[in-house]
Length: 83
Image (cartoon, rainbow, N blue to C red):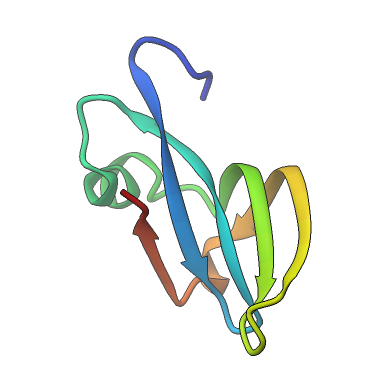
């Protein structure tokens, strides 16, 4: 999905078994983040994230920064927008 007038970036924090991931997810402008996950992104196996920071979930120490990452949605324990 290309970022355009109908889309916006939402900063999120994602918890997996081993990592805490912070980054931006693109969602439609007219949808709440939870609605986009449940309706628009529901059929995708991987969640595309940009401007990514990855942290160790046990220590909280930063592991790396990346421009782009795909996260398998089956690995996500929790996800929340950062306001």
